[in-house]
Length: 63
Image 1 (cartoon, helix red, strand yellow):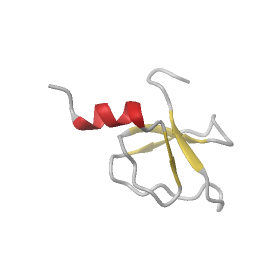
Image 2 (tube, helix red, strand yellow):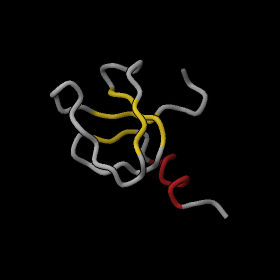
Image 3 (cartoon, helix red, strand yellow):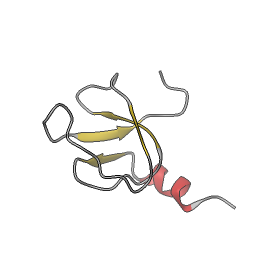
Image 4 (cartoon, helix red, strand yellow):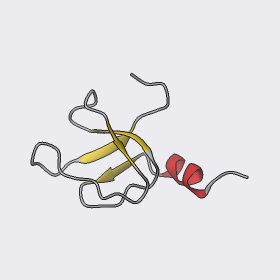
């Protein structure tokens, strides 16, 4: 059986600063896609370099 988080990660490829991470994995700020950070499901997304941002989930195996 698939975890609910796996189903949600397909539906929510992005989230904003201050919201909870919908699925564990590597996430990168929309303005800096090369700056990936690991977040766990439920963590609150921080600002990036002091600026609120949109975080986008990186695909598995994406460098």
